[in-house]
Length: 225
Length: 230
Image: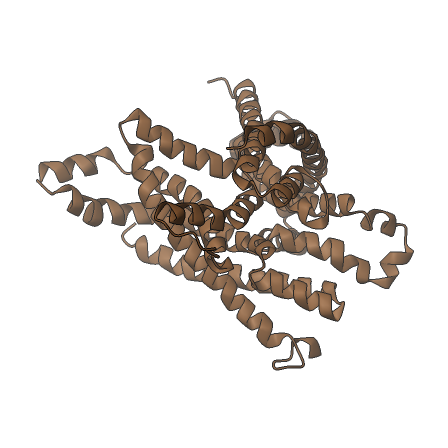
């Protein structure tokens, strides 16, 4: 055990953890919007809209995140047309490519979580709203969405933790996130175990915080029996 | 399509063998995962606090740390650890373990943590009466497990194990960083030498979709088989 190395690498790894958190929060924010959008499309009765949303989630859940990042970072640059548009400003940055890949990936999983939450809402609740003369729009925004969000909290908590682990793949496109810096320190010092303990400890700490935060939210928004 | 030709002119045969490699690594990793689950599930269900702690430590750490970090630990630390053990037995030569074993071990340990959770959940949801009835009938622990608990447990565990399999299959793409030539690595090589990354990475995505789709179909059949009578 090399305690000096562990202590000296801790500040570097903590700085890198900020990059990880930035990647995570940005992609979760956009991913939630996309997920909600596609969940609404999934419960649409029009078969084409429905199939389109299903295709999106199937595609992104059936392939590894690494492939998705590589297609966006290495692949899209190949299209000449894209290079001439303003999109290129975003797509040439590995940071934004990683964010786009993570957003689309977590969006697919989130849409599935929200869809199943929408479908488990008891029809009686919606019928009660209708019989009280509440408009469909208000029923959707004020009744269905809050219940669905509460319902999907535990599954969404898991998704946040999975996504946090997913951000480690940003290191494959030259970003120096927590895993990227950890790998760099390992490959220069050849002390994998020490670095793993410190970097893994930071990840576990973040997992712990997220886990407890979701638990707190679950308790706060639980239905009073 | 020329790019996918078999033989020397295209990448078809290379990608085909790479797909077989992905399947081989996934199956090996899943199997290693089962072995880990067989060791750690009893620990998690044990009455002793200390054994519980070991079991929980394993599943919490592995499920809370990115897969890539675990792979780096094995990639950079694997041969060092083996050499350390060998040096205790008086062997000081350099030992290199191949990428297949390192990769399967790393993915296997990750997959094992998920399998452990699945088995624990399945056993806990079996009615207590089943254990008691077996005890009353004087059936020994071994027969009780293999003939009574396991068949019921499998029915409950298969849908979740199918998720674990999908996760394992997709995780194998990460061991391309160690240089093992599976789908991702082969696409990387092909993309590099043809300067056509969009095509090869998209094709890799198609290969993965095919693998997940086919395994889904197979697992559905298993599910039907084990839920007979329900």
